[in-house]
Image (cartoon, rainbow over all chains, first blue to last red):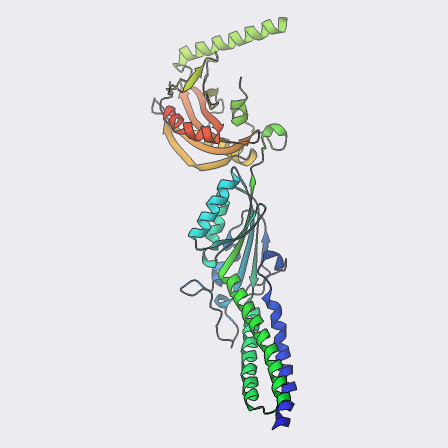
Length: 265
Length: 165
């Protein structure tokens, strides 16, 4: 009996080793941690955009929406079969640069609106604000941010994490089964040496399971709550008189404006 | 010295021409009813009405001859485009319709911008006026630092409805 248990341990260890790579998915959801570059749609296309003024539906993302009635993604779909276009799990991350007349007021307005949408402020680094908003209301939040001023930069990345989520889920299920088998072995083990070896393996396995659970939670959060980063900057004092912009072709338009009114004596 | 005399003569001639034009067309210098916290400034400019508050808010109405004979919609869009796209003004709300004392329809818009490092509010009222075959663009402007602007903007909006002739 002891011999059989001991012979099984290396096999179990080999299986469990395969699970360990899943721990790498526990990375933080910070935008900097996201590979700058490609994200795949269901069709396998790269989805990265960096331009001003595009519409969210440019990517046909409505087709990829994957939410339950409560608006949260269903991360526990059957592993069998390829996910359909509507089954894809997408992480959306946007960066907006907006010129506004009053930065403080704009931040207050955006905070209130994100709160209204069911999101929250996730951080602030100098002028860069980070928000999490429910994925199904992401576009509304973008529109509101754009409406606060003049957009000078806009970029959007969409990451398809369906495969990553499925792989981690499978590894997690396997790890749990392995842990159950180890527990069963532990109950049958009758000498101290075997008990110690099994317990050590159980400890390692439990740590890996916890890491995979955290990684899945992280993925679920990133899918359910889109990332919106906004940088509000004061409006530049650009008038046609400073040579940076083209003056109007109509003389009377060139003669009006705050600077003309206030410079009258 | 002779240049100065010539300049004065030219100004006098222009003023006389405007007075004559006013007499012919019945279209005189702009005026508006403002509350007592506005002081109307006498600029001796026939096509201009100017007033100020003690805290520095400025209200200015000017008439420009429009030889191009554009419509209100065209000039309103052209001014808005220039302010927003070329000068970085931030629109506050949408354009609204306004009527002067003669019932002529105009448009009013509000913006935010920065001037000498300070955030300012800026209101424009615009009318296209045709009288005796002559086309005019009447532009009313009101501006002040944001706090003062907010304090007076309702009064100024009301004053736009009293603009005459």
